[in-house]
Length: 195
Image 1 (cartoon, rainbow, N blue to C red):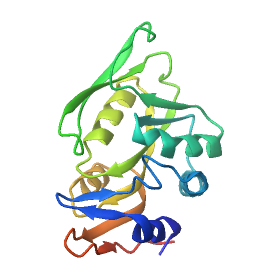
Image 2 (image 1 turned 90 degrees about the horizontal axis):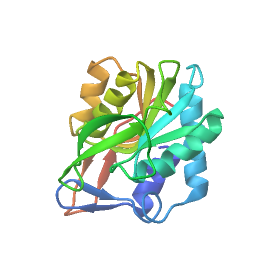
Image 3 (image 1 turned 90 degrees about the vertical axis):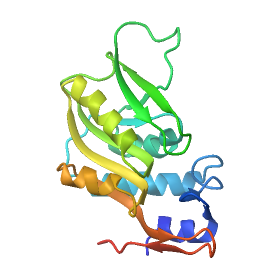
Image 4 (image 1 turned 180 degrees about the vertical axis):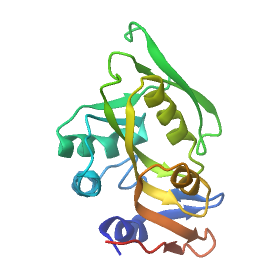
């Protein structure tokens, strides 16, 4: 069992509707030492890839992606869920349904920050159905950049997103893969992974 799985067992809370709350250490209050260790682990898993940018989606992905970008020594770009007046020029746009919020967001990245020269590692906090990853992949493809890999903090292995991404041929690494969880008992079972 790895360090993230241990932390999920210690502080994660299972809620009805296949919701795993990790807000005490990952996406509301953040354990920066844990996030740094996650960044180093993603770096280890993708060290053989040529990474020039780390891409994520606001807002929960930012905390996970930042230490990854730091470990690689490259910029982190995050897709914004709303265009504001301070984003000038052309943008790449993708539609992303949210499992958690039950809405569809348009996400955007300025064309200044993704180009055909980029080799992109996409990072996010959760993978359920894979919609956020599909949206981020479409942004990279729109820029004619290369998707080098997908890094996920917590994958819900009982949902289809991870299987779909792997079947499409993407190099997907998840630090913790939840095989099953129960809101009634609070039990969380992880899929065994190679070290």
